[in-house]
Length: 325
Image 1 (cartoon, rainbow, N blue to C red):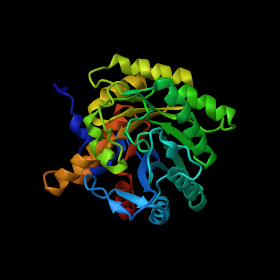
Image 2 (tube, rainbow, N blue to C red):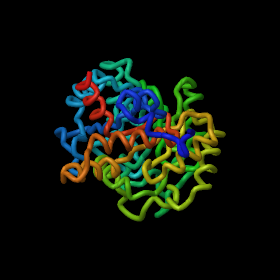
Image 3 (tube, one colour):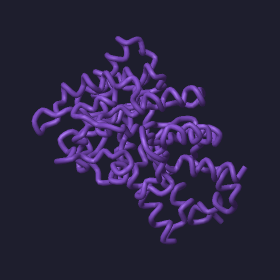
């Protein structure tokens, strides 16, 4: 007699069976590891991000080789300069901290993909992502400095430029600048959809990039807006972006899916600092299974449509996989 219901559990009865029919998977090749490099001082752990460090160049040289040995394919570098000024001139200095870190990485680990964050907030004394005109961020004046920064990073050996500044027209300006400087081959991984989020708090500790006044709501997106994300995506695609970032991740997986449905470009989801710190804090309290939560977080982003994931968990995931092998 025909059963009155379907036996879905038949495909779940053993671990091997579950592995066989698993729909969504990820590998280390899907992960990008963010790292912070400081110009002066000792290497220090970031209090709000256990296990994540601000490395001085000497320690960074050792750490980057360990990262490559773990099988991680790509890193996203953020620089912390010794001095800051009104226009963030350290961002485009030939001997700036990010330029030094890029050159060092390509010298020691030439196969590692080096992605350079292109923003001014770490380098300005006011902490905003562009230059100021009075108390306002001057969009168009900022584009010229961001263009210079991207060219400087490419000249230092960056494999990819990742502009996170959220200025209108930033992809167009940077693409034009790179092409004119002979870096047509350098792709742009655009922070196409970047919300004004409280999930960034620990990052601002890590990068020393909190604004000294006001906030970033005039140039980062309102978390309540969904259709606006598609307009931002369309602008960056038209301006020449090669990859599209959605940031943050967990509270915006619907946006990841929307962008996936609308674009054929690679989609990158940023598993941001606040998401990392919440997991670490709960794990330290013994409230959650940390390894399983990390897995569900990453697989959820992949299931939503992300091709790549920027995550502070990348090194931890790689270490666990090495143990399994």
